[in-house]
Length: 557
Image (cartoon, rainbow, N blue to C red; front, side, top):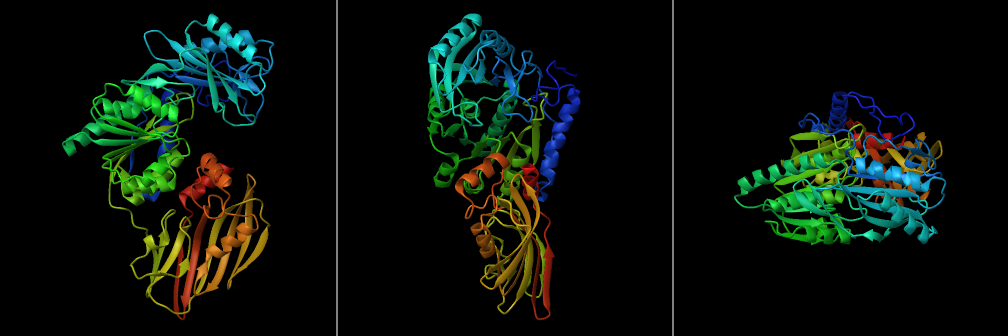
């Protein structure tokens, strides 16, 4: 099946318009398989065929469209921050959303400055209904907005609720923090899968209602199997709960579910929607990482459906310490999904299969689902050995001491947690000479070449290239006894060139941006080569550039 669109090539929304649907599904499976294959720890995972969608046109539960100066309703053009591509015949928006968009065009024609965007959510029920949020910039005439809302509802009677939201100037987010009701109920009951959830302005909902039902069924099946193993109803923790659709479906089958959601109105909506379910329900309004790192509770099953940036590393480590019998991960980004599964495998939780899901047909978006189970943690591989010196490959996020071959091992090359690559250990004392080379991505544009002296060690660096205002550099370090990258990185940071993702050196706002926008969750430093010598004893090893490092650099381009 092939779908065409009258708005191509101008509209940037659907990159697979005009591509045979079977080819789309295979391409998405390949994208997920390639992301997982980059990590040796995930080599045993079997990637299933992509779960195709029963409807590939007019399926979107929710759309967010920008408003142009002449009443255009659509998406920003590729490479533009101002030009809006008008898409009156959008092929993926729900049919009611298309009707609302056309009504807005008629009402806004020739008007300037009333709206900056519109957010439409369709509500499932006996009759189609919609929740519409009109987005304005600061200073917009409130009377004009109220009149527009009344006219829009008069033209499209299926609009059940209308809201106005004030957008933050210059923000990449379509919706701002303040929303107020104009017409209709402040919340509506929406059917997602087998449960009712409370829909509120801006609340998350999966784009494809049928595909959301597929994910629900897979998780319910996993919970039923777990119940058979335990001989009782499982206790479940759902992080990033949103409106709670997945956890509510599990509570419906009798699971006792704890929802963690940082947005208080969403947490309150979960409690309202949970009335009458078989399992017990509690909600905790807190950041997911904060809760998992501080809780003393234990859970049989953990369910996560994080934003595109994936799970923070400290949350992954804390979740592994909960020792769940089942860990269900729903992802909307194959690359951060693979990064997180790699870390979880090293922590002792691993998947046997992963399923790509076509949540957004006609686009390049790939949703994925994996159900992980406890496995023995993966030990870091040994790269070289000579006499009483062992060189291992230290994974990102692992502490130096966690990688030691035995409890008495002493690091010859002292690296920080978060730095990956070749790392040497020895159980003896004595004078050693050390040489290493490391690849780094640092903030700002570094000089083409430089020299750094730090407490007896001498390092030089060479700038390889500049990428998006950052510098990829190669560091070479020589020292006696101990080669400390930490001191060299301190010096680089003092020059304004802290490694991207470096918790101890980068500015907090830079850390947040690196994680949110690029998926960088650790210091972008990798030891590629190390040589250690004492007398006639020489140990030398190389470490291939880490997959997450390669992916992070690619995302910067």
